[in-house]
Length: 142
Image (cartoon, rainbow, N blue to C red; front, side, top):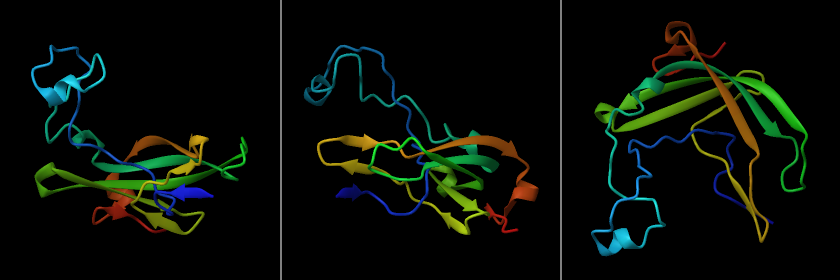
């Protein structure tokens, strides 16, 4: 039986904090618990992902059958509009799938007991003109 983190076919999650893989000398107890070569020192800023704001057309790929070791993928288009909120501290990526009639915001992931995580969805993005792709910060329904 799969454990589902979310049941909507929605994909993107962005962080407003970038992390470095430089190897610093541990200075605190919590720092000493990190794997070698990593640090919890914040190196990014609130606007690190501003480049993603606007409109995008995408090609989505999704496994036709989950949890059975399938390599049979389904491909379909989607439109994504990303909007900044709270001065850039938060972002919302809304996808619309015109051939499916779906839309949404949340990540989908599956873990099968003792078999690990299954990658079951990928997407390729191409920048588009938000004036034609988005309406009020949301994907235009056609």
